[in-house]
Length: 251
Length: 258
Ligand SMILES: Nc1ncnc2c1ncn2[C@@H]1O[C@H](COP(=O)(O)OP(=O)(O)OP(=O)(O)O)[C@@H](O)[C@H]1O
Ligand SMILES: [Mg+2]
View 1 (tube, chains in turn orange, red):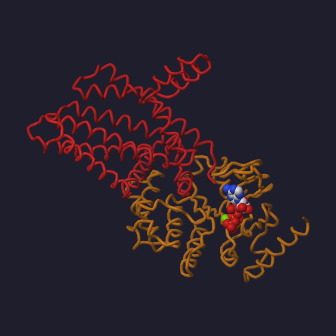
View 2 (cartoon, rainbow over the protein chains, first blue to last red):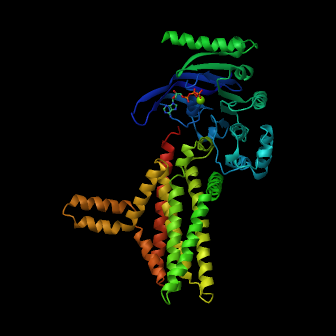
View 3 (cartoon, rainbow over the protein chains, first blue to last red):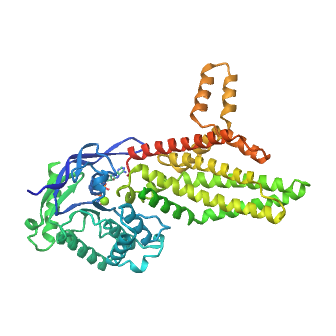
């Protein structure tokens, strides 16, 4: 039996504005599950609630109601954090550290030895084409370089589950192609991958299944194979727009 | 422990590589040298004035660094969203807080050491024959003790308040700590028992720092304070630091990271 490794049940999150104490429902009764070794893409318009979902899965936010489980533990549990990798949306780093220093730090936190840290960091830097900038302060990195470093640090512990929030944002065409290649390689290794994106061509190429999030609700979910049948992303676009417009009609 | 050390190292690097720090240390050097001028005006007293002013400068500049770096220590991580990459790794909140704290405490140590060495060197240049009093070194230790206490207060506030608010809270805490005894006596002068009780409560809540000053004054006048008192002060301050960091951990555990 295939067991789901990521599960949310009726997950709801209200954001509270500081001044007026007004509630805003960013996520409304989200129920989804992702199986081991599956690549799941959460797609949706800006402000749909994708990042909010990811933050709940990682324990950065606490649910207003409903529940989250990753590898059988609630979001943010220490034993789960050992086995996952996270790339936040436009990641931020300590500007005075160098890229290599941050990777070294990440490796140490996961209990890697000095030698392991060094080898792993060198491999990852090469993978994201940052070898030359390894000894430059991160404060001097471009947006795309920070994105690449974010990808590298998320893989330092050879994670079982990968959570990436818009991995291709800010990347040049070659960078985007590199990320697709990395994703396909991770897939081959049997990793579970949870992606947030609104770039449908990328999603079409790498995901097994997608969920469409609209105004905090899951308005559609299906296998890529049955949506596009391995064909062009335009079918995915049609599916996406269809899901959104039919949910608007219901409201 | 690995995680604590890794975060401490990051924090230390981050603070030590900030140029503002050097401006402060430079300013401290200038103030120390000003002690030579002041000392030369008052006959016979020059070394004493140089030492007094030097120590006061170290306490003052060290305090400014502890307060201004400390109050943004955790807040900056949240504001700049660097914390996303920290708390989503297997790092417990207490490890994060302890690591940030030790990193800054180490930075303050290095700064105190630099300013202290400069003072000793200045004393030596002014009067090469002068034997450096061990009490001067002891004074430095007690200044550092107070600085790491202030650092803990600032760290605590920075887990939930903006830096500006934290600076205000930390300064208030520090001031009450030094004047608690007087405030309490003031409260007891009032006719109302409520007022007296209020000041009593504040006195018990905020640590009594005036004893640190007393010890420093003693050292300055060449009197070696009672060993028992020193032991008491060190353990009292350490206990308070642990308490503050525990509170900071609780706040960090309960809050969300937007
Ligand atoms: N801290 C916050 N306080 C108040 N509202 C928030 C907060 N964070 C997010 N929101 C709101 O919640 C909704 C969902 O935001 P979220 O960041 O999850 O969207 P998203 O799907 O990731 O969008 P994008 O594609 O632009 O990244 C938005 O309407 C946003 O305004
Ligand atoms: Mg987002």
